[in-house]
Image (cartoon, rainbow, N blue to C red):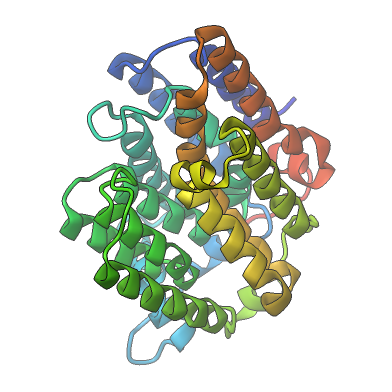
Length: 352
């Protein structure tokens, strides 16, 4: 057993254990410290697939005047990581420092009691072992970082201006983050989906943003670097697997709503948005690009779904059972797919 796999299992243990606990700051800080060490182990265990490319590009000297549009349109990551590398001069440490940034955003977003009190405590360690997030820090790195900016915009701040700034940082980390923008606007104007009705103006703005998002995602799929081709697939047929996850989540939510569509839609706007948007992109973008969109949508929707699931359970025993089942389903693909499991072992390792 590798150290990487061993510490992954430790975080899995925290996820199950935290199902039984209420949200308290010391508990969040403990698992945050473990997560910091775990990511240090990950970075010192070699680079998988895309991560080898990210490590290589750290030492590239990029300049706005000469860089291709692929880099300039996602300048937050490419130029930010390059400047950080110039200061640190070590690829492993640089990537780990970037890990600390997105990890801090994640834990503050889902772990602080004031902003995100409704998100259960177990979500904090669970997000580190959740299969799409694992794929993020082991392979599709910019997508993961963009997701964390969006999560922070949803749950980390109450100031709409600051939330908008983090939304833009996500957009210029990975342009496909535009897929979140209509939902982020909806979340903001309804104060976290607590206001049931929207006026004509807000509906019009949402519709405009949604059309803009459709065009933006198609544009972002037309990448012009080696990452667009050789690294555009994760090696797993995940597009329809993600679709099945969205459908399963919808069926559970529909069941909780007693098969009342109006009630389902009222309590699960973000989930309905995600599944409709994902299905709209599958035929147009193809498997690999739609897979990335599915991963990005799922990472942000899961904390919201976990919160709604917790609220729907009437008794503590039901709540505990659903939490445990949720963790099991979230980590199962890591152990069921050999390609995913290899991320945590010495297989398929490369150096930057």
